Amino acid sequence: MLIVLEPDITQKQKNHIYRILREGGCISREITEAGRQIIGSTGDAGRSPDFFESLEGVARVVPVNTAFKLVSRQMHPEDTRVQVGDVSVGGERIVVIAGPCAVENRERSLAIAGQVRKYGAVLFRGGAFKPRTSPYAFQGLGEEGLKILAEVRQTFGMPVVTEITTPAQADLVMKYVDVIQIGARNMQNFELLKCVGRLGKPVLLKRGLAATIEEWLMSAEYIVSEGNDNVILCERGIRTFEPYTRNTLDLSAIPVIKNLTHLPVIIDPSHATGIREKVSPMARAAIAAGADGLMIEVHDDPDHALSDGAQSLYPEQFSRLMRDLYVISPVVDKQLDFGYLDKARAVDRMKKAGNGQGRRAAFLGEPGTYSHKACMQYFGGQVQPVPMNSFKEIYETVREGGADFGVIPLENSLAGSVHENYDLLLEYDLRIVGEILLRIEHHLIGHPGARVEDIRRVYSHPQVFQQCRSYIDRHQWEWIPVSDTARAVRLVKEQNNPAEGALAGRDAARIHEMQILEQGIEANARNYTRFVVIAREPISGGQKNKSSLIFSTGNQPGALFEALKVFADNGINLVKLESRPIHGKPWEYMFYVDLEADVDSDELAPVIRQLAQKIDYLKILGSY
Ligand SMILES: O=C(O)C(=O)C[C@]1(C(=O)O)C=C[C@@H](O)C=C1
Image (cartoon, helix red, strand yellow):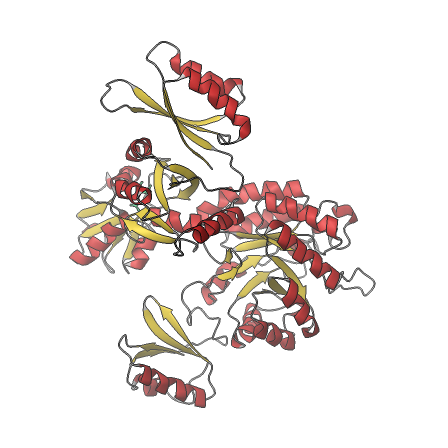
């Protein structure tokens, strides 16, 4: 049952409600959803909904009609994010857990961890207590294995995941690991579930070999009802009659789970298929189906692995898979961030150096814009997004120290470059420190119940009109440009006229409780915007593969050719070349170049010196 409270409820009125629930044997939690205070309760204390609705300070009561309560989506409509060190499971970024099935020895574990970390895994897995079908098979290294896991965490800054098989191991796993796994065979070991519920550490709960989704969620309920909300569900295949794979991976569980519960869900394609070559296709499909992450077995010598070698990927296969996931993720509104851990650490270091306040990132418009989404996807929850009215204000605020970062769109795959930002990059002395690609899906948004035929006037950002040109050309609408898409939706809402609509993203519609009247109205579904992150200083640490520069040349034949030849002679690949007019010098241009190299590295220093000799002006925007 959900008891939605009045905004002005007093503490005394709240205490009264809690007392009735407690005396009736209910477990209760206070939740804040969309600014409303709600008491979620596992029972009704023998009273009717009308009884609770008649209490002072109660707005309304919503019954929760599933067997599982605390884990149900009704109880908690927003997604839960399980925080594991710097990693947030269930957020905007895909979380990949990788490592061998079992911790075999120190050297091998460190070697595999180094590889999977390099290719983008953010958590390391490895079993120290192995529940094996045969009592004669390798049973794991026990505490020695846990110590190796702790060393991996220390060496690579990766949190570690391992399985617990009995409450007797609780003290040991608490000492050494970050996420406690409950294996498929123990999904209904209720004493173990209660034990990890009390430990408070994040729990990765695998689905049992023959468990229904409801049984699985009831097991999660055991953990949450002990006070531990940090549960990650993991589908790992179920027993069916099909012998071609070890188990049958139930990918349809992902959308079902997403609907039923607020808990994050990840997929283990290694145990599900049991066969190396089937792992990557299933992993790609899992991300496309909306999973929050993956748990993948990787081994550098799988033929000699002490456990489950046949399903372990070689590190190079894992690397290729991660590149595929990087491409797939934006299609389903997520990101695979190769710099996840390094970035988190670098931003964290900055925080300590500052005035003790959290870091802030300026973005265009109000919450719900694409720029806001880019900001959230780039930083996760680590940075507070700060809304701005214009691109210039973003640069100004970052320069003056009002924000540590700015997130700005630079180019769109349908409408081309955002020229204002190219000019501002030249004008302000700021650095590009990162980039992020977002798939942009526009919708026609109107009042609930409005119809497309009723629309006469549409509001949006000018870039969006360009990206939806073919759609809006089919309608006789008046177009009103506004500073950002979320503002467009807000204006339409405030004006309360069903003949008005906005072109914007799903987040803006959700925030303002408006309706999507037509989905996906951009001219081409392959609509991507590239955003860059700007800061006053470069951020240190992590791999940097790309750089941006601005230069100008003299106005003589071959000048641009001579400059570009420096890159060609040194085998450096250019990925973008753009020219912008120099203000006050008609028909003279600045060239903006993106290259696949780190211009701040020692190897690039001589190349930059050669370039400087061929050009009149050079500004290094940054490497990232
Ligand atoms: O108005 C927004 O939502 C923005 O974030 C701005 C903006 C842009 O300026 O290009 C960002 C990305 C999209 O391509 C469309 C609009």
